[in-house]
Every structure is written in C-alpha cells, then in structure tokens.
Image (cartoon, rainbow, N blue to C red; front, side, top):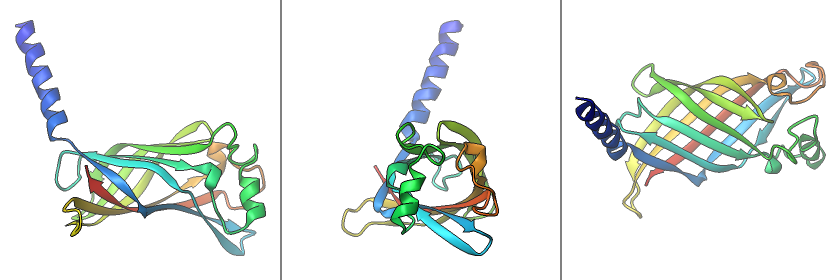
Length: 189
C-alpha cells in the first residue's frame, strides 16, 4: 500500500511539472519603477533594471501563477547622478553588499476577469517582508515574428522604505511610502 501511495504522489508531482508552463520576461518590454515624495512637494521617479523575471503557471488564466523577479540595484536610475550615487551607499541600498532586490509570489487571488491580488516576499537589502500587489493581465497574443505565445501584465503596490532599512532621513524629506509599479511582456518558453 505504501508503494502505491508513493507512486500516486510521484505521478501527481510529475503531472504538475509536465503541465506547468514557464514564461520568461522580454527585457526590452519590461520595467520596474518606484516613486517617492520629496519634501511633500514633488514626486521623484526611479527605475530598476530587471535582470531576471519569470512566471510559472499551469492554468491558462494564470490563476495559479508564481511570479519571480530580480532587479539590479547597482543600476538604479532617478535621472540625477548625485542621487543615484547616494542610493548605492550603505544608508540606502548598500549595493556593495546587496546588489539586487527580489520578489517571489506566495499566492495569487483572482479578483475579476483580468485582475488579481498577488502576494509574495520582497527582499531588499537582505530584509524580506511580505508584499501584496494589484496585478492586471493586460492580454495575451501570439508574436507574429516568432510564433510564440506572449502575455502582458502590470502590477502596482506600495511598501515602507524603512521596513527594509533604506534611508534614515525623516519622512518630511523623503516619504516613508514608496509606490512600486512593474509591467512586462512574458514569452512562453
């Protein structure tokens, strides 16, 4: 009986692996950005290059998808070289020790036809915290040139920078809340 149960478990796990599909980010059409408020007067936008991102899903509507993303903090850009240099320092992202940020989803909940709540773990500066994002499936298509399936998503949410040990300046100078947004095209492997 134990052999039968083990065989059934192995069969179910291999079936899940067979039907799971992997989608890789098209880096030319994917981006990760953030916005903070400076002195309660203006918004400062930044971008973080995506070095790796993928989706694994077995359902066509992505309702069981797992999203993974890695961003290059050493290449963060806000359009101001002095500020970009400061973001590399130990009091900010400390990119000598922590050159990347990462996100891996832990659950996805379908809210409506193309809207989801995506929860996962965000790691910045060696600190991992739960994070929930509003996720939208923008659509799916077949690429005319490659013949491969593609899917487009956008995600948005917010975090508190000090939860991750980023920046010791008061919130009157740089807002505590950081708006995150990501968008991308994913190609079926």
